[in-house]
Image (cartoon, rainbow, N blue to C red; front, side, top):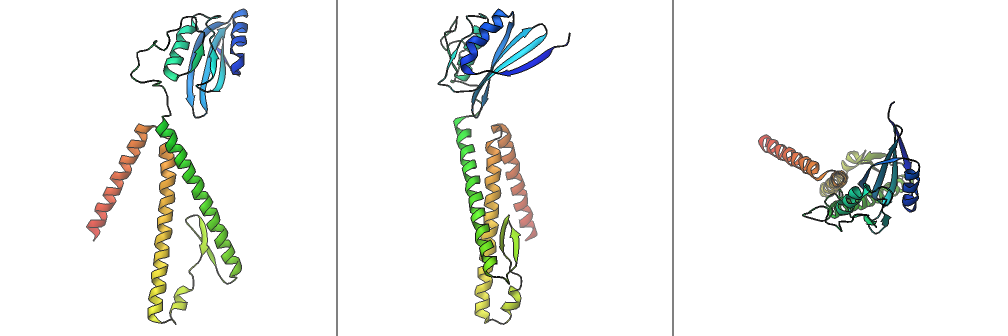
Length: 242
């Protein structure tokens, strides 16, 4: 007989009734596991009967939620419940054999926390930066669209994801200007181009930081090292070309 697997979502308050029903129906307890997510901790209780593996998931459990033990129905669950308590900080109540947080000798509390406070703060910072960047881009696009609407003869082009007035025809206009004024206009255009390039680079950096914040710390460190090496090579090539 091929193994069949079922997945069910169970509410926190239904853990005890669920365990009683599985016991009464002759199911065998297999395991309990915990998974860290950004929205809390997911608990998964697995039972088996007649070739069917049933997984009951309780989603987004917070560390201040009181989770009832099922060791009254399945005594063997006490091992998993002590483990989840010690490694994930889940408040499991009334475990039949409760080690009181001493099931493992831990060097630090809750070592299985995948998302550290520093990582979470970095993600929130990157997310806030991305939102602010989108708002700035939207305002700039609206302002430039208004400029084009008020100046029917103006053309528009897209630069760095934002619509900006085109400089087409500027050189023709500069031909008839006073040389000193031309120099000032060119300087202003160069400064404008420099600011646009800096803003585009800042946007790229913010997007990169957001991606790195969501990565495994070791992988993020490797990416940063590769970027620094690439930057160093580019700098060396630029010096050779001088």
